[in-house]
Amino acid sequence: MEPFLIFLAVILGGFGIIGAVAPVIPGPIASWVGYLVLYFRPDSDISGKALIITLVFALLITILDYYIPIFGAKKFGSTRQGILGGIIGLLIGIFFFPPVGIILGPFLGTIVGDLAAGNNIKTAIKSGTGALTGFIVGTFIKLIYSAVIIVLIFIEAGEYIYGLF
Image (cartoon, rainbow, N blue to C red; front, side, top):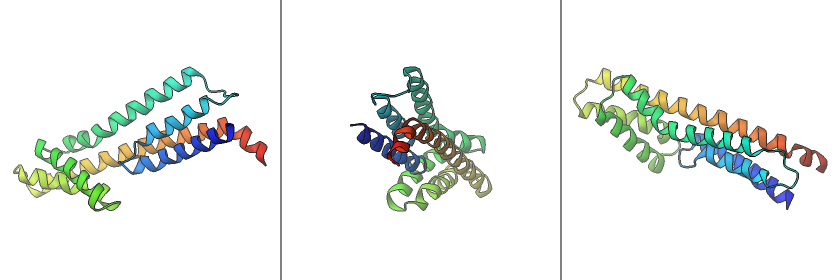
């Protein structure tokens, strides 16, 4: 059973890394579930406190990931229509133009929304840049968290994996 748990934890950690850059997969949550799987190993060194702390971070990062691009767009002067356009642009980009659409969708959607709201092109591009910056920052935070968790997974499973060789 132990090899299966380790394999599953590593796969989930890998999904976490992929999910950090692909908004369709909740990367931090997938990574955390991989860490949770290792908790159930008979000789696990993972404490309940470590699980709770890492879960809180996973949830906080997942929630913030939705607000950071909005905050970036607002900080750079976006309107409500611009923010809505960014959300619509993200959804269109994910489903119709992956992977480039994931990056360009919120940027272009924010610009279109702000132009529709009556902003000039300079302000619309500035707010689109804010949305894009927020998206990149959120992705970077998710990637760092997921990388830390996969390192923890390998540290926890390392002795077992080392014993195989």
